[in-house]
Length: 111
Length: 117
Image (tube, rainbow over all chains, first blue to last red):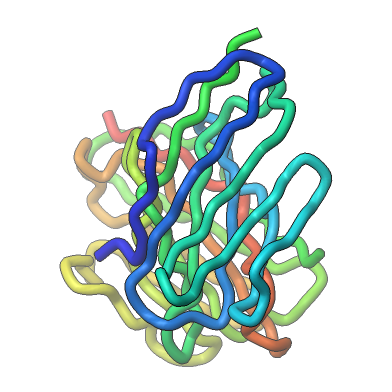
């Protein structure tokens, strides 16, 4: 079963606008990770936020984590057409630490 | 970061044949490798976990006789889709972890697009 749910499922914005994607999860976590996937391609790791962190930045990306609400958000500022992709949150599970993925948000940035 | 290489990136096979997909950790020893499957416009679903030198652990609903996993060395795991059928057409991605802390990013291969005709 999916660990997390993401919303929105799809998001379409104009270049230069900000994009916000949300993720919720069900169990306690050590960290939460965000990945990008271009159509038909592999995963690109974007950012990892640990359970004792509340916010993290990387370039145009800002991730927040609220462990009390079991939710995270990914903000992409000043979006570009090249940001068009699917974005997934994922959390490690169990002793083997396999990654459990959310349903993903398909972001389209129109030039 | 660590590099995971997956091969082939694309494969088309005839129904009833078998296909082998390789996943290699290039610059670290992978104690654990994971295989995921992704159907179009859906998320990644874990199929199985393999630890070097032991049998793979399959997720519920994944047929172990159909998806053979071998993790014979610390740098190589293979997934063989046996007697492939069109419904096996999917995107398969591997991931690998080493001895380091689990509280770090996971490393993924580039994925394999399997089309069964």
